[in-house]
Amino acid sequence: MFTSARSWVHLARLSAVVATFLLCPAGEAGASPITYQVTGTASGSLGGTNFTNAAVTISGTGDTANTSNRGSGVLQNPLQATSVSISGFSTVYAVDHIYFFVNQGTPGAGFIDNESGDVVDLGAGSFSSYNAATSIGPVSASSRSLAPFGTSGGTLNMTSASNLVFNASMNDPASVPAMPPWAVAVFGLLLAWVASRTLRAKAWSISP
Image (cartoon, rainbow, N blue to C red):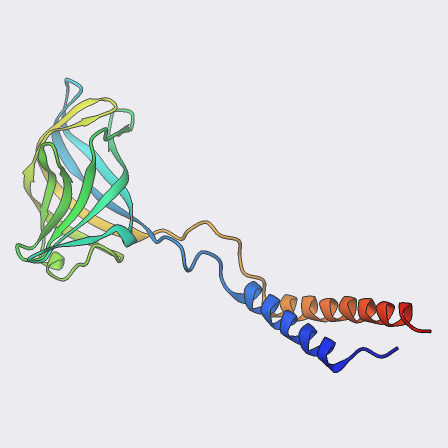
């Protein structure tokens, strides 16, 4: 008719496991999304339509886990998506495979298309120690080189760019918020009560 000590030990262990799971924030062991963004004023053409001194934003999203060291202070991160917003145009997306890169030696950073070269190559002293895997910015930068690349709206060809500012920001992975400690305590007591009732019922069922 009495619950055994071993049963209560198992119950305590189960409660500890459940509490640890509930207190552990979701998503910590997963990917670490990061967005690299360049804003500024540029002139050029998109899909054959010219623009002059238009506000431009180029944003690329990647995963810090994919950042690779190419040697000599050069790091690269393949981007999952790269968007371009130009004042007066609809947002377009790169159709080529774009990478974000950092060259700590020069120092510089930007977006590179393996087909056409440096889409946007920025120069700034802050890039001398940047590892492409953490938040940084805003960083005022100069334009060192530009190259055309394919987008969903046609070829983007920027001929000049100024007032450039770079930012990199970490994005929190989507996750379910962790249960607060008081809720875990209540849940643990409830679990213990249910388990004790179950064990008691089993004890009564096998009584002579």
